Length: 277
Image (cartoon, rainbow, N blue to C red; front, side, top):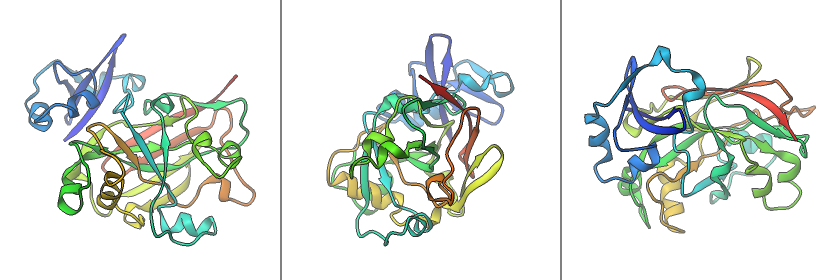
């Protein structure tokens, strides 16, 4: 099953995305609100609200799939090929940092290039979306806490990221992180799914998500030992090799660039980079 948040004028609505239409889930303004409801999956499956033909939905009507997560926990250095390209050793534990909801944009919105940064980089990622409270869980319980997965790009201001040993300041600039278009329930993500990032049509990242050092179940378990993960919370699971900062010479996003991010089975994003004051 696919779920999404659709913009309706000045409001939004949670929808179930079928083969040819997006069906409103009455009473829920977004997917995060839906996930906070007990029995959310049955509610979504039985929804019979207004149906919007997919062919008639303008791209900018798709909002971030969870517009205001309570928490966005990001994982650094979690693909083997990316760790190696950055000249590091495989980690014993996940590297964690935070991102805030103000960073999120829709899957077809513009991505802002802040005027204070000249090193804006791409980081295509698999997002893990929580569907039930998780505290000190492991194994099957950790897996069961996952509602589904989505595409996310952790667009990063490298010059700000590396000003200090702490990465947060380069990771959460406003209006930089496309998220969506869909939450795809956990049972539909194939083990052989491939993540791809393109810049102006050129593939810059392409790797199977199986290359993750710490898989989704492990991440949920580890993070839940630190704090409670709640429905709608998001874990950005890290990026593979191919980032611009690691290239020689380094390459960064520029005004007008088109950033496309996709994962097999989860859909695709397309975002124009726009310089802002």
